[in-house]
Image (tube, rainbow, N blue to C red; front, side):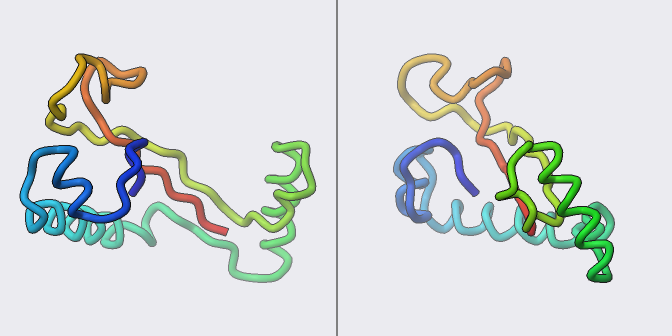
Length: 108
């Protein structure tokens, strides 16, 4: 998880969002379990070398850069609604009308 904050561990998240470290730990683990539970329903990885080649060429073509020839798949990010931390209004609002952290995963 990456929220845009320079936070390296649950204790840092605890300080930023005003929650006990154990609560942060529980949230991270429960959210991760939710993602893993649906992983194979939403992520379809190539099964053969030929399928990997087709996917890789597609990513390289979209990106117009050969560095993406090793990419076999990606998932877009999404906003996770959070309780706003103390501080200036809009600190975590990004382009949404609610405070959020961003979950983004990429697989290759």
